[in-house]
Amino acid sequence: MEATGPALTEPIEWFLDHLKVERGASPHTALAYQNDLFQAADFLYQAGLQDWQALTPPDLLKYEASLGPPLARSTAQRKVSALRSFLKFLKRNNQGPSADLPSTGGFRKKKAMPKALGQAQIEALLACPDVSKSPGLRDRALMELVYGAGLRISEAIELERSALDLEEGAARVHGKRGKVRRVPLPVGTVAWLQRYAQEARPQLVKKPLAQFIASDRGLPMRRQTAYARMERYAREAGMPEGVSPHTLRHTYAVHLLKGGADLRTVQELLGHESVATTQVYTQLDLEEVRQRYRSAHPRR
Image 1 (cartoon, rainbow, N blue to C red):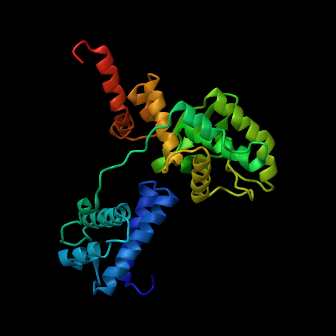
Image 2: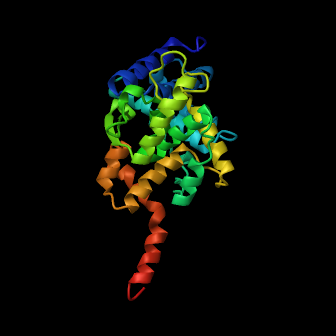
Image 3: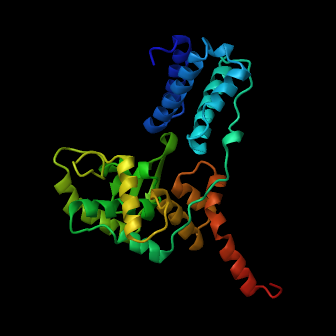
């Protein structure tokens, strides 16, 4: 981004430091902000902007107009949201423009929640990897972590061996904003993790590796790789399109709630800051509630 003026890029670097140091943003989150904000700065610089304090509403409209198709609405919304957060930061520090902050409303679409899988579907998906081979046993262990402990895929692949207590059946998980939570592991999950640790991991890892889950080359697994393998297993299991690691995490939450766990407990296990975030995991069971009501209530 050397072609962009320093008056635009230096405040972005300041904001990125703030995200990482003061707000505890993960490297993945910080990189996403970096890419989106430097892209915005480059566009605005090419349009004639020399300083963020000189930003005007027409400048913002031009930038938002540049985010149309073929760019996905969700991607456009993320980019505008990143710019909005950055400009709010500048305003709080008396470095921002007088222009109104950009709104993400124009790009917002109805939130699509993943459908929770049934128990039979979960078992079919977990049974897909060829556990007679090290990569397959590794994949089974990874899916067990996501579904058995409700981890985000980033948490699962970044989980260190030292953070696992397989004797006690628990994991120390580093979540968003650097928050740490302790998550219990089901007996079945522990059994698969132990088998992976004993049989597969030594075959994959030839040099010291802190992360518990290793790639085929004995390195930390990438998120894209984890998603691709999950999608492949979902197709093999005959699942509908869209099944991802987050589907397993969502299913974990729904199954806990169906089993009688209270919302606050599920909130803690998932690592959500607000219980309002956890409440979305109950929305898809409304039809089941209606059916139970109709079968049980005398007035139906």
